[in-house]
Image (cartoon, rainbow, N blue to C red; front, side):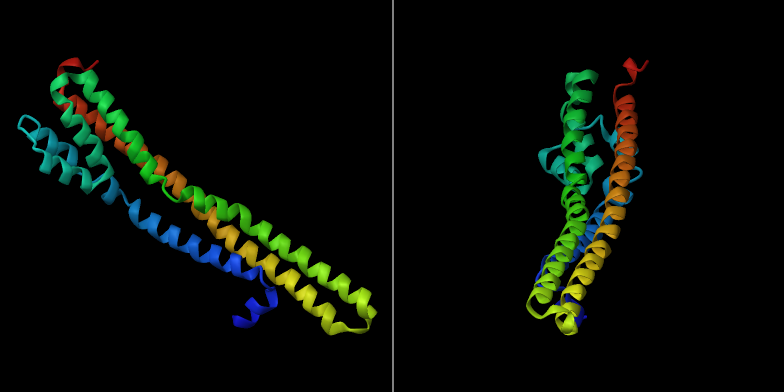
Length: 202
């Protein structure tokens, strides 16, 4: 492994760092975007059954900390006494913040997927420059010098693609996961609103 890193030259350092960062983001987001973590089942029913009572600040803060859906429903509970329309507006505002948090680090992951092949391509260019310098200095009679530049070009190109391909796959998958969770939360929030203010259902 160390030999491969050395063969790729200095550009292997940012490519390696990008791979570590991408792996960390994928693991963290896969764990954080579990449905049970973002939109736990049974929360709407439990809160709608208890919505006739009073929630103090501590209870609402605990509810917000439990899940993304909890934050949305907590915002609705705070506005419950001001009517269905204001309650809906409050939940929509809270949902914007929740979606922003769900998409955390995904821009970074997409950037890694985009720049990793470019870093590999830069390594290819640097390696070929070394090859031509060796040709100018020694002609074709020094295979070792030529092999070093060609090796650097090929290794960095391969490394950039190895990082970019899984990063792109996970980026698309996680974006789709966020979209699915948003749809689930929209449905749950609408159900909660209908349970708390059923008189204005269409």
